[in-house]
Length: 222
Image (cartoon, rainbow, N blue to C red; front, side):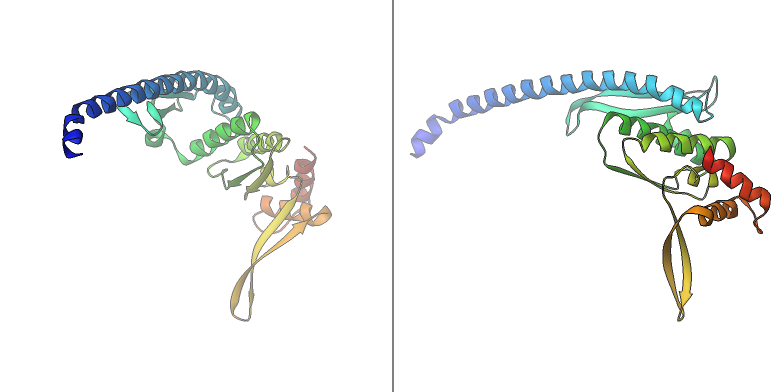
């Protein structure tokens, strides 16, 4: 048995080399196919995201997907993928994490997620204060995009902006209450005049005015 093992060692090594070569060919074919699919998806993403960013007040923004080949194989193929971004006309594209501000990041993430929900069957998506750094007219557009997403996906949005809260189908108010020296988190569902008053509070600094109530109703009907 020992002699047989020694004498057949070269043959077994050659068989292993052939198996390894075959596996590498199969892996290379799959990686090449994945790269082609990524290039196709990157082109589509760049095309679709641009009008959304423009609608969110970033008409001069440039968003690109950069694919770079790597040596050998990784668990995700033979590519390194980077999102490149520039917010200003004529500026230089750089990796998104190095140049983007908080408000810009919120809008880019919303644009990407709106495309994801329109192309897949995500049952639920949660936005936890994705409107950070967003205000005024842009916040209303952010709310409109979320509203469109809710046609195919259940959307939960945690927000402090009345322009976004006013577009919801359901409005839940979360607040804190002290009972017996303990702070408890409470949540209630708002409807009718209670909801109008809450949105008016979000619009007002202190006292709720008639104009704030009128604006709240206008936002809810918009």
